[in-house]
Image 1 (cartoon, one colour):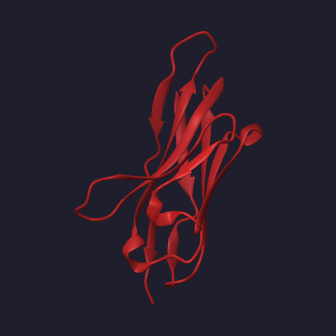
Image 2: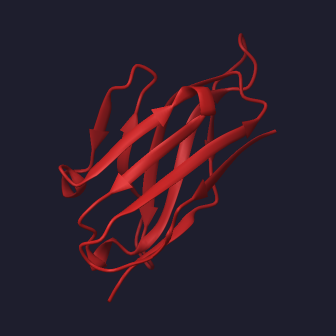
Image 3: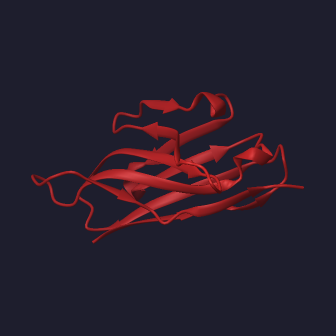
Length: 121
């Protein structure tokens, strides 16, 4: 099975930075698009950033110029560098990935179980 495991969350002061990582493991033949989402308590999950297999990125308007998504294909890992964090960005952050477990088969969407980010003084 394919697993996505997020790490790097924690407590950070407003204006601080965190770098989240999400590593895919298991039956991973090829990873296409990868992305980060967040879900604050009582709110819907929202897209934060995505990166496709060619390295093209897109961001939610609220995080542009502060967050950077990147990937290391050799490590099957996607990163999210978050700078100038705001208190309202406290949320569980989830990564997802479009993965073909075996080349020539279908592409499936996988989700990690999330990492908690708390922005508070």
